[in-house]
Length: 153
Image 1 (cartoon, rainbow, N blue to C red):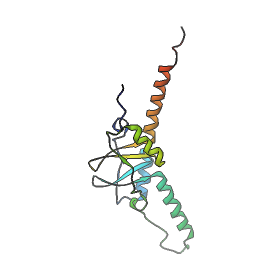
Image 2: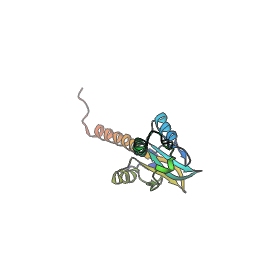
Image 3: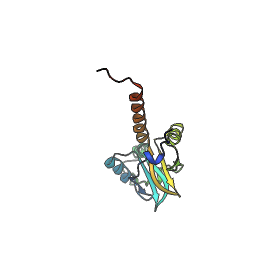
Image 4: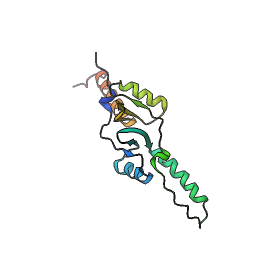
């Protein structure tokens, strides 16, 4: 019998995080440069939230509506938001030693793109839908090659 795939087998540990006092342009730039859609927000080593690409889009849309509604001579048109103003603090977390399919099911049921991996109240990784998809493709390919008859000579 094969041992189950664990979250630690799939998760990313090379994390890009932001401090809670970071501004939205910093979050947007980090996402663009590192090609990520989820950034954990930390206070020291403690996880306090998650900002996603979707959160940024939502905040930008609200800001555009506010700017569009402002008078031309209004000096309050420039608004600066911090990641804590738009981040999610109701976080889905799991532990690295949990079965990966349980974490994937959690993501699927909650309809989210990632689960933050914590151990002893410290962020140790992130499991994204891309990580799960890569794993699923590998499993499906292995299954296909195990069940297909070998090619004829």
